[in-house]
Length: 128
Image (cartoon, rainbow, N blue to C red):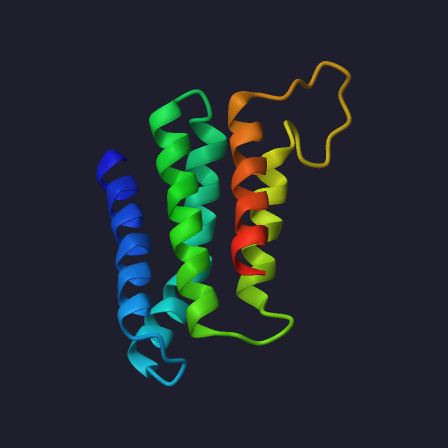
């Protein structure tokens, strides 16, 4: 599981580096890689942070991967109504709440919820 986690983190970092080197929406190679891997990457990042929210290392590295994926998405696609932007923010919104869609009186915010909120606000401030 740790190797799969590291692989996803490396892919997000690589996408950010590639997109910053070739900041062109016409670069089809990066756009194809981003399009093909975006949904599964967001799903896995959300899975890791939900399941291992007690590990500061996993939470901080996962949120860094969200930032890198957001950067790569914003460089490659600069359209209003960007679906990748909506997916990233929706995913982070879910992570900001202790229980998504459940009303329980004993739900308390954890440090990972606050970190996800901070990351979401940083992304909105930086990219939108």
